[in-house]
Amino acid sequence: MQFLVSVIDDKSNPGCTDREPAISAFNERLIAEGYWVFAGGLADTDAATVIDNRGEQAVISDGPFVESKEYLAGVWVWEAPDLDVALKLATEASRICDRKIEVRPFR
Figure (tube, rainbow, N blue to C red):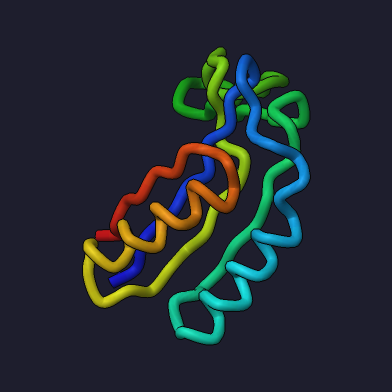
């Protein structure tokens, strides 16, 4: 099973910024244990562009999709045998990143 693992930061209570070495070590472990598929950090929400082309004309706007104190800061895609394993890894990831983590299986 593959899981989208979202890293959620909070503008009013951001996670620590010194976590890069710990995150890199965790990523190396994910790779070594065969869970790693893909990962990446995202630019700040100020760099976001939203495109809505559901009407007669495309509407392009600056900024995030929703106004919120919480925002998507990065993602992993993991391959795990089941949800229990993914949740165990996500629990570790939350501590290592000092941020909330959301886990969602792909269909």
